[in-house]
Length: 180
Image (cartoon, rainbow, N blue to C red):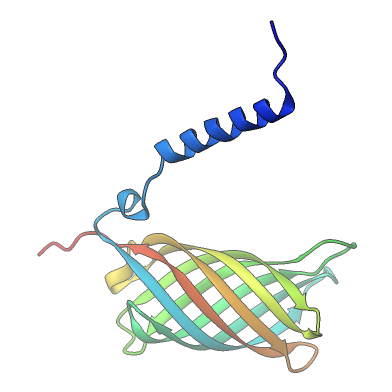
């Protein structure tokens, strides 16, 4: 049996990969139920850190205003755990829960977040944060909401324990079908 040379092996691998990728393409619309809706949001928040018994771990609360495509104007309340690195090469990690409340109080949308924060190389007082969000229900129209989103946030410390931030969200929310 003849040995295949490296170029032929590479070409064969690329062809097989192309066939595998091409044959399994599915659009997002094919994977979401009919009662899924795109959600977009942008927010302005203030936050405060509080120490815990672990000097590298803090709790954070964030409150602010949010424009949400599915809810209109809302208020936000978030409770997070912030874990600062204990060694080189480790990221700042963030996790917690967020509640958005519509301006009339009729609806809330809740979600959990996990993410990382990276200091801005030009100014470590700024952080660039990215989160994965998982919707976990709420009240009113969102009582049984599920879904997922990505959040991109920029924060700025205004003191050692407080700051401001802005974030944007893109994702989808699934709610039960209407009984109409």
